[in-house]
Length: 380
Image 1 (cartoon, rainbow, N blue to C red):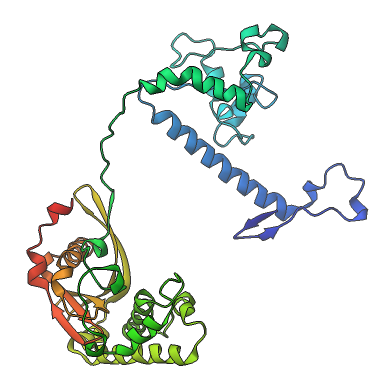
Image 2: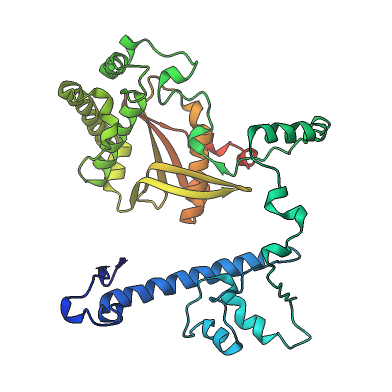
């Protein structure tokens, strides 16, 4: 069975009784044969790519071993059928190289050494290499081998490997003390529940099973809140993963409370100065994934919102669901976003503004000046 964009799903079904006496049924299935040719061609192309990579990545020498069975061409004419555009489709690396092997077989300037190893009968295998003389795999024989090898590993020296720095840099993880998600995950002091806006969020989270990983937590609320913000700016319907409310165990009352709070937050943002500018912008991206370079590291993240202002500059907005306003926690994170945005958009960094919008408080904080002071080289 094969699947093709042009022909759909093709199955090599048995022929009807009228064709039961035919030697081959595959020749009667046009679509199956067409798709099979496509798939064989794709597999052959991938095999050639793998063969090329394997050979060109070697530093000094390459060894290719293969069994010269019936799949190996017996002469140069048959080998040339495996050339690109030839009649035959290669199914092994040795078939790909077979035209090259035959071409240089009688030449002195061959770029490789070809050695034909004749087969050896079992009776000719030296006794020391026969299966009967090899160590068994019983527990007793394993223990005996371990005892025999003990001097080797007891006197071995420990090799200290150089610590390999991580390749990726995730801006959202730069501030270890960030309490944006579950406050229980940080030792930073939190505001009392009674003084926090939308304290209903805390009550629902605290009433959820804290020990249950599938329980409703602050991350769950953040996922839903971000979905409402994205829908508000993009003009689309709200859509969030059902796993975000799985911890509410189907409680319609709690779901309505959470969605009601998120709707109020979204309306508050839309009415704000930065929200109005975002909604009116002709160019904007929500939940914008990106990759950028910082020295030798790959910066990988997702910008909540970026839009173009009327004066041609750009504004980055990062939504925060924190229970307190502490913008200093996110200077490095937004500095990474700013650098990435300037490179992607081809503008100067000072043309990109950085805004933190605290959803609980309905308050925006411009931290552009602080972000410009961050030394990005320390993260490289």
